[in-house]
Amino acid sequence: MERLLILNASPRAPRSHSQIYARMLADAWKGSALCQEVRPACHSAIRQAIGEADALVLVFPLYADSLPVPLLRLFKELEACPPCRRPAVSVVVNCGFLEPFQNDIAVEMVRLFCRRNGYPFAAALEIASGEAILDTPFRFLAGRALRRLARAIRRGEHRVFRVTMPLPKRVFLRASTAYWTAYGRRFGVSPRQMASMEIEPGPPSP
Ligand SMILES: Cc1cc2nc3c(=O)[nH]c(=O)nc-3n(C[C@H](O)[C@H](O)[C@H](O)COP(=O)(O)O)c2cc1C
Image 1: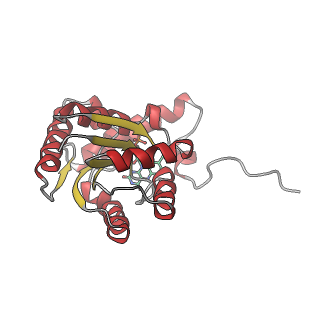
Image 2 (image 1 turned 120 degrees about the vertical axis):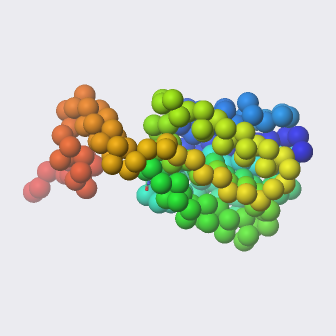
C-alpha cells in the first residue's frame, strides 16, 4: 500500500491541531502521503484524489460529540457524486476532553457512512486532550499512537487506538480551567460569560 490521502476536516484547518496530527501521520507513513484541507471549493479535487488513493485518513476535531461541518458536507457530496474507486477509510479524531471514549460516537458515524457507501473501514485513532497534549511532555504519546496507526493501516489491521494525557481528571480540569480563564481574560471575556450559552450579543430588542 503506497499512496495515502490525508484529509484535514477541521473548520479552522490551516491553524488546527488536526493539521499538526495530519503532518505527523504523513511523516510516519512509509510511502507517499498527500495532505489536503477539506473545503467546499476543493470537493471535486478531493473526489479525484480519493479515487487515486490506496488509503484515506480523515483527520478532524470532535465538535459537540459529533463530526464537524466540513466533513458532513464532504460526506453529502460523496454520497451524491461518488469517486471512481473507494479506498479503505481510517480516522484520526481529536477532542478537548480528557477521555478518549468521547470520540466513540464520531468514529461510529464515519463507520456508518462507510457501510452505507461501500468504503471499507480500516482503523481509528481517538486522541483526547488533543488541543493540549502537543504542548506538553506527553506529545511523544501522540506521535507513538500515530505511528501505530500508520502501521495498522499499512498492514490492513482493523484496530482502534486511544491516547490521552496520563493525568488524574482533577489535575486536568484545574490546568484547563486556569488556561481558558487566562485566555478569556486576554479577550475581555469572564468565566461566567464563557459558561453561558450566549455566543454573540443578540439583536437589540425593539
Ligand atoms: C464548537 C466546538 C465544539 C466542541 N465540542 C467538543 C466536544 O463535544 N467534546 C470535546 O471533547 N471537545 C470539543 N471541542 C474541542 C475540540 O474538539 C478541540 O479543541 C480540538 O482539539 C480542536 O481541533 P482542531 O484544532 O483540529 O480544530 C469543541 C470545540 C469547538 C470549537
